[in-house]
Picture 1 (tube, helix red, strand yellow):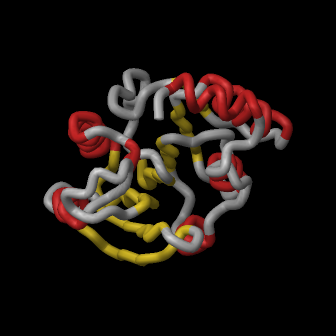
Picture 2 (tube, helix red, strand yellow):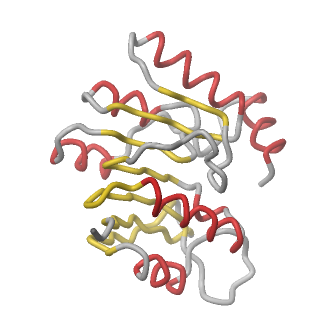
Length: 188
C-alpha cells in the first residue's frame, strides 16, 4: 500500500489493522523486561506507544502516515504522557539516532519491497542496542508466492543471519491468513 492509501484509510475511519488493542505478546514482553528505550516502527495511532509509556518506557514512534502520527500525539498528550512520534519512512529513519532496547514492528516490515527490507535491516542493525530485542509480527506467505505482502521462511532465515532468533510463535489471523510473531536479539 502506498502512503496516500494509508492516509485515506485513516481519514475515512478506523483501518482494520488499527484495533486499539495491545497484543498479548507485547504485554508479556513488557511484563518481563525492565523499562528502557523503545522504538515502534509503523506505530500507527500509538496504541503500543501509549502502553509502553504507561509502563515506564522512553518511546519513539515512526509512521509514514501524517494522520496516524497526529492521532498518536493527541492520544499521548491526553494521557499526560510524553513520546517522540514522528512522520518518517522506516527504510530511511533520518531523524532516529539513538540505540533502543526494544524495537517493535507490527505489520510494517512484511509490507516492504526487497530493497525496502534491506534498508530497514541496515537501520535496525544500527538502532538496536546490543542485547536488544526486535519483536515483529507479520503475515506469512509461501516462497515464490506473488500473493502480496508477507514473510517467507527465506525472509525469516535471512533475518536470522543478522540477529539471533530467540522465539517464534506461529498463528492465524482470521480464518485464512497464517501469521508469525518473532523475537530476535541483537548479537553483541
